[in-house]
Length: 457
Image 1 (cartoon, helix red, strand yellow):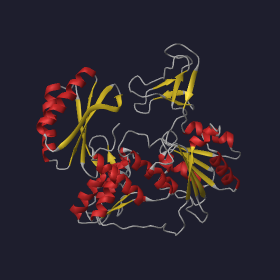
Image 2: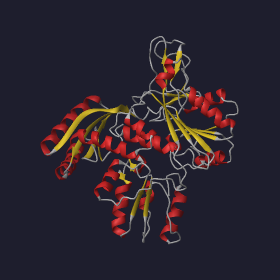
Image 3: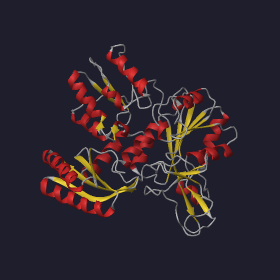
Image 4: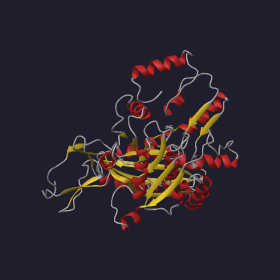
């Protein structure tokens, strides 16, 4: 069960489950609602993955639904992960969950050796390439020995944005407060949030200059450079753009398994679950991308991503190596990942969470307020803040503040964040607040309450 099934396929699968023709249901987060009558076991693999949180209606956290179904059917729920979420691991430490640890790989092969490359040193040594000297040497060595490589760059497209060298203007999406990303295959600029797209302009829309510069690098550009730099490089690009078609994921992975490609280049999609015994080297091109996101989970997600992708190397009889390119080699998330040290990361991150009062030391509700009219939005946000202050106690209310992306799909967006330990009065206030603002604003403002949010975009 997953979202890529057609309506007919989904109906067929549901009918098979209802008729007791199957004993095991495998799927993405919606599979937790499978209409099984006698559940004996529920397993959430990679339980830390943020995609287990449904961000659109109906919003839910798959782990919570699994726990409720486990209680109802009186069956165990297994949360599996090499890098558990802090919330789950802290529950294991407190004895709320049973904790079972597997410190070694199942086949007893050693974990790969991880080396950090300081890209500031590369620039000081006049290397302005996307690849450090050590990265180039390691990739070439693998190709010479007929071994395979996995490279992670968590940014798709060709160039991050287009800038005019004369007036400095950056071409943005007219519907969202983000830059348009250049995609070379169809020579278009595309918004990754609303899918708005335009032809790549020849002249600057602001000053009509011809001096437009492509800035930054995505997977398309890296693919091009790999094929230019390395003789015999056969690159398979694995991102949202190349896997859109039905069975697109499987076709590309089968191709790599048949050794029709020797370099698998991809976004975070390649970090989990892949098991290719001929992969002896994993390279991370810019480990700081996920570290610099304005989110309290940025360090946790960076640590998890690096540990997960490092685990793709050396899964066969040949020893594996990993190179991580970064401008922050001293950051604890990166140094702990380089030593495969979850415990050290957990202790450090929990200290910060406790000081700043973030989960697992509190619960959170994110209130997203949206409107097509900026002036109406400002008034509504202040009204809601005042309403919450009057109707809640023993909680911390932050905001209103601009969302990370202030405008998305022609809607202006602000957020209010509530942190609390005991939330009975918070829930009551949110119920009455929704009724109050729906009547007062008559559809001019949308208010969305997200409990335990996983995204602040």
